[in-house]
Length: 199
Image 1 (cartoon, rainbow, N blue to C red):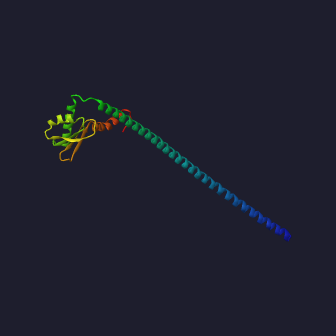
Image 2 (tube, rainbow, N blue to C red):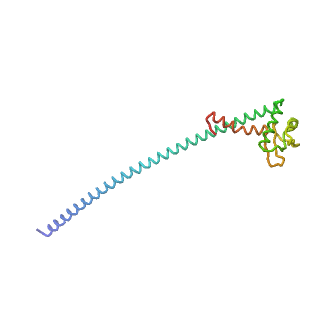
Image 3 (cartoon, rainbow, N blue to C red):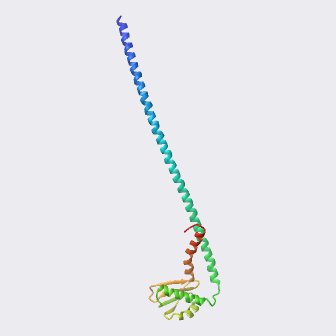
């Protein structure tokens, strides 16, 4: 065997061995990549599912917020319309009350209003105020209340009285106007309840 052929054989052996090692390494690396890719794929699928799930939850939450906001807005509009309707009805009622001629029952009403006021204030020693139209009626009724006196001062109201304790520490507004105002919230609530709006 010549030197050239020995060298050639040695080179062939080295090449064959290197090729075999390289192929083995490549196969091993390929298998590792496949396994890593498989793991990554599972992880990506889980992440994808998690993102979808979070997106769905967020979407449902947003939908509930939108529905809740719409319902609240509709309810507020209903309450506003109810309040406006009650105000219109009260305006018409006040107009009618102002145009009603006061009959023989009016002094009884004034007497009742003064009596309620003294009970509310807890004293008989009072000063009674009224509007200029009702001054004569109140003057005739006040004689039933010996510790009461009629004020020379007048107030602006549809009718009724405002009563103050003589020491000036307490006031009870028992005018028709204030009585109507005290009724408003109750009527609004009653209407709202009847229409299922709630207050």
